[in-house]
Length: 103
Image 1 (cartoon, rainbow, N blue to C red):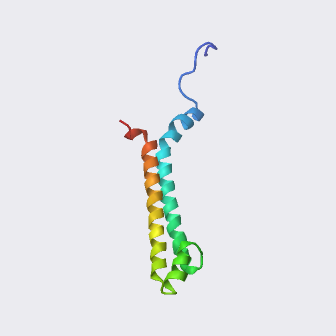
Image 2: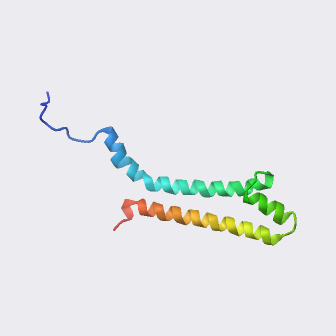
Image 3: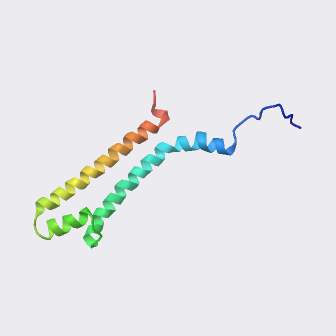
């Protein structure tokens, strides 16, 4: 039998989840979200070829089909810049949130 005056040792399952598991998984979640955003951006650009809209549609309709390669090149460069920005920000946030990398 346990006395009412003795403290309970250990952590509850809620405390384990909120204080250990979630903080340890945040860098991985940020990294995976970054990958998902860049993948979605690439898929949305590719969907322009089948009429999905977005930057891919602008690059195909106004650049490639009308032989205005400057517009197509500008859309491609804009997509590359967007992917680089998302990837850089996501990588820096994941590194900042990772407690193992701190000295």
